[in-house]
Amino acid sequence: MILNFIRKTCFTLNLNHLSNIIAIIKHSLHHHTLTTNFSSSYFTRYISQANSLILWHVRRGDPVSAWILFHSLRRARADVDAYTFTSVLRACTLLHISQLGIQVHNQMVKTGADSGTVAKTSLVDMYSKCGSLDEAVKVFDEMDQRDVVAWNALLSGFLRCDLPVKAVGVLRAMGRENVELSEFTLCSALKSCASLKALELGRQVHGLVVCMGRDMVVLSTALIDFYSNVGCVDDALKVFCSLKGWKDDMMYNSLVSGCVRNRRYGEAFRVMGLVRPNVVALTSALVGCSENLDLWAGKQMHSVAVRQGFTRETQLCNALLDMYAKCGKVSLAQSLFDGICEKDVISWTCMIDAYGRNGRGREAVLMFQEMRKEGGKVLPNSVTFLSVLSACGHSGLVEEGKKCFKLLREKYGLEPDPEHYACYIDILGRAGNIEGVWSAYHNMVEQGTRPTAGIWVALLNACSLNQDVERGELAAKHLLQLEPNKSSYIVLVSNFYAAIGRWDRVDELRRIMRTKGLVKEAGNSWINVLGLNQHARGLSLPPVPPQSLKPAVEVRRGKKGSGHQEGVHSLRLLYNRYLQWRFANAKGHTTMKAQQVESQRDRTRRGYLGRLF
Image 1: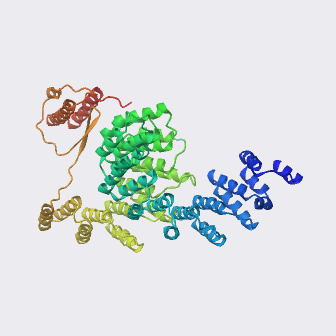
Image 2: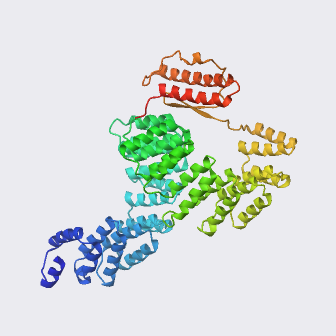
Image 3: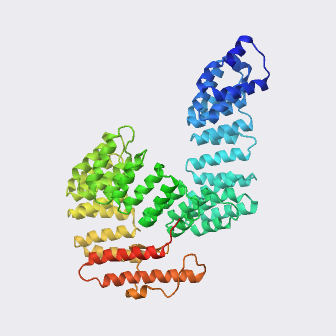
């Protein structure tokens, strides 16, 4: 109405009043209606208002409308300026179409709007975000004056394309040019160091942060991420504890995730006790519960999620599904799965994996069939097929495995990965179809897939099961060529030669392991007492009777100092020795005794282990 009134009466307004009118209109009318109601002559006369409208479309996440409006301006031969082009370049970035950006760049060259620092910085940012790094570098080199924004645009482009070495090169060039580093630059530098696992270089960046007096609240999350990614969790904890001021959820979440990635579950759960519960932190902690097989702590996380109303978050529910599956609670996983409002491909894959992991391959196949009935809502991906193939292999479902492998390519157009071929070879090998095993291998090679160590392991296992000595030796040879320093693979090959009576090769492989100092990784177990997880390997202590379980040192939750740590350590050792005593004195009913030990373990944990929340 206002626009029609303006046109009919030829009412003259100054630019400020017109800007106010546009601000009112663009929040009340649909953007498509707004675009079509404006005439080309209006845009030609008031190009600054057109620039505002293009920028508004970009900011609200509608790059298509911004591009249509820009195209209308060009058709009307409007006198566009540099501000028009910079806004349109942002629209090209959102569309992630470099060809449109190239067209805009060409028009900028024709109109002479590409000479300014802001315009060239926008071009560098557009090309880098669209993945055209060569063009971004070319424009960057043409710049007479480069500010920190232009450097950061190029730096983020290399990081986005997973080129941390070149990103570090940009940082060094910034140092040579004496460019003042911003917080964004330092965060990008830490990300580059984390990708390269460059601990010393990252420490230098940390020192630079301290020397420059930069805002640690902004950079602390990046520092925690860096130290966690390079395996220095203690340094990440030091950075976290050094922050005297306010700590936001991102810092807590980053620290919890870092502790879980480095299998420092005790620290992760302690940090969880400090943070206000949120979806990201709970999801990271649930990953720790899954890897640690800590059902009790996982249930506590589930309770917190229910109390906080997070159970509508699909990502969190998927983490709960994975935790219950790995802890063997398939019925709980199924109940949780049924209650998920919006099931995505990860939800279905987790549920399929839950059945397959716990030896219920038939149910896994049925779940996969239900997923396929969903049609276009949820399509299985490569991980889904990998879970189904693994379930078929462990349950002896040969025909179902063959059908699944056939669907992978023919129905869904997915190319099998080496992991899929390894599972398929394992299915055929367990079924005694050794010729089918090698036929699948040759088909894989013909498709252009290079055999990995996992493929040769599957072939070696199949040959060992089916007494195929000649081709088994071929698989063993290729496996040792690919992984000459992997102790577990050498032991696997040694066991194969022992099974066929080649003791000379067994002695030779054992001698090679001794020469290289290789030792097969020992089995491990987790004992959870007082909320602390002990990763015990090769523990050898004399068994003790139950009365020795009472520790001489009083251990209280929350007690500080070395006495607390010594008491915890003593309790761990005593508990391990107590378990040895129970198993050593089991008479006849070993299974019953083992179940009693588990009950005693639960009672001990409930007596000493405090709640996280």
